[in-house]
Image (cartoon, rainbow, N blue to C red; front, side, top):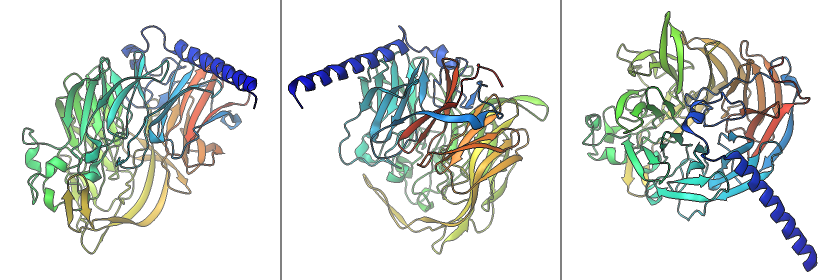
Length: 549
C-alpha cells in the first residue's frame, strides 16, 4: 500500500470516528439522563433506560406496532458482531438513538441504534489471576447524568463517559485475589449507583454496595452474611465459628428499586460451602433471601429467606419484579419472585410479609410453606455421602433469566425447567484465597423438560406453558400489544401472551443467554436480541404507523 493511500485511509477513519462521537454527544444532552428520566422507565418509547426496562424490572414495553397479527413479518435489520470470544449475558440500554451494551471480558460498546455501527468501544485491561464465578461475563450498564456504570471482573465499579467511553472514575469494591468479581448490572438512582458482586464458591462474604455517582466514593455497604454486629448472626453456628466471614451470599444479578418507598430489593446467593452445611448450621442469614434496603443508608428494612440453610446451591439471585396487583379482592403492592428452589412467591413489598408461595415446577424437597413462610422439608431431601436425588437440581427451576410481568393480564412469564439432581455431602475445607476444597458436588440426574410458563399472580396457578426442546437461559420481554419474546438455544421466538401460541421464530445460530429489549426510532419499532457475541436488531419488513394493528 502506498503512503498516500495509507494517509487517505487514516483520514477516512478519523472522519468516521468523529461522526460516531457526534452521534454519542447528541445522545447525551447537557445534564444527561436524570433520575426522573430513569424513573419514567419506558414512557419515552425511544428509550430502554435500565436493566429491567424500569425500576420495577417488569420488562413490559408499552409499544404496540409489533402485534400477534403481524409479528411473522419480523426480519433482521442489522447485526453487530463483537469480534471476541465469549457470550452476551447483558441487557442493552437504549438512549436517544444509541445502544449501550457490555460483553464478555469486560468489553463495552456504544452502537448506532439505526444501523448497528460502532460509535465507541470500551475495554478494560484485565490482569492475570482473576477468578470469575461463574464465567467471564457482564450483564450490563446503568446510567445517570452523563455517565454509564458497570462492574468489572477484577471486582471494581467504574463510571464511563456516555460521549466517549472514557473512564471517569474507578473504584475497587474488593480485592479480586480473594475470589471477588463483578458481573451484575448496577442500578442508579438519585445520587447513587448500587451494585452487587460474585464469588460465593470461593469463600467470599457477599455484599451490596452504593457509590456516589459523581466521585465513586462508597456511600454504604450491606453484607449478606450476618456478622457479630448483625441481628442475624446467631443463624451461623456449627463447626466453623467464622463461617460467616466466608459464607457466600453473592449478589451476582441485578435488583429492583421502588422510588416511592426508597427501597432497594436484591436477591442474595447461596451459602458456602454449597452442599455441606455442617460447618454453618442454622439458617445462614441473609443468604438465599431477598433483602429490602433503605436507598439512602443501606439499612435493612426487611428480609425474607426463601431457602433457610441452603444445601442445594439454590441461590436466590433471580430478579425481583415489583408490581401493583389485586389478590383476594384487595389491591397489593408486591414483589414477585420465581425462585431457583422451584417456588413462586408473592411478598408485600412494604413489610416483606409472605402473601403466598407455591411450587411452579416439580419439587421433591418441599411441597408447601408453613404459616410463618418457612418451607416444610420432606424426608430424604438433604445431601448425603451416598448421594440424594432431589428436584429441582442445582440449576434450579429458573435461574438468572429475567422474567416479565403483564399488569393487564396479571401474568408473570418465567423461563423455567424441570429437572432432578443427585446431591453429595462430603467434607469441604476452606483455604483463604482458594475457596472451598473438597468433594461436595451435585450432578444432573433427570432432565424432564423446560419451557416458557405464564403464572397467574393472583393465584400462583399456571395459565399456560410452551415447552422447549432444550434448556433455555433466555430472559423474557413483553409488549403491550400482547407479544412475548423469549427463546431456547439459538431459537428466538415470539408468543401470544394470552394463549402461549408460538407466532414466530428465528434461528440466531448461537445460544441465548440474555433477554430481548425493544424501542421506537423514526416511527419504527425495533427488537434487540443478544445471541452468542452478536446483537441483532429486528423490525417489521415494512414500516407500519406507530400504534397500528
